[in-house]
Amino acid sequence: MATTTEGAIEEALLARLATLVLSPAHPVAWPNLNFTKPNDNRYLEAIFAPNAANRVLIDSDGPHQRIGFLQVNVRDGLNKGTRITDIAGAVAAHFHADLKLSHALGLIVRITADAEVGSMLVETTPPGVLVPVLVPFECWA
Image (tube, rainbow, N blue to C red; front, side, top):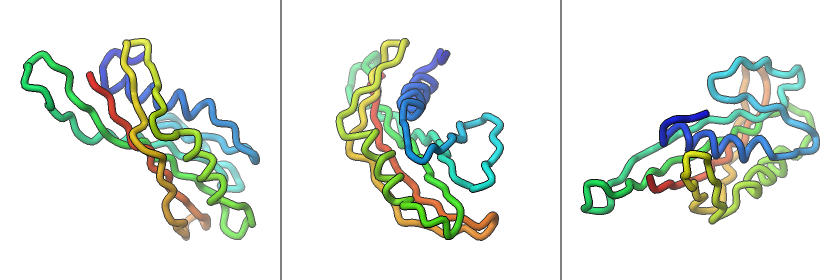
């Protein structure tokens, strides 16, 4: 369990991702954990990307606005015929605007806008496709 603000933000976002149910199923490559890519190259990749801690209030003990993204890369094998953009859309819908995620440390992480589905990228090694989904968040702590 996280003991810092940054760790708590990451845990809240990843806990939400863990509740996502997709068809077909997509295992998740979690940050800093061993992961073996499936043979079909179909999986999600979670990347926690905190950005800035903004001091908005003059009060020295006031909370800071902490913003950033959770990036979820939707991956699949090349020429599989799956609707990877639909899968990415399902990931995005799971993180809708104004969704509030709570953490045991007493923090609330708010999704500040609907998640953005990026353009499909083709990878050569191993052959596959990737669609990034960016989930913007903020937390006052």
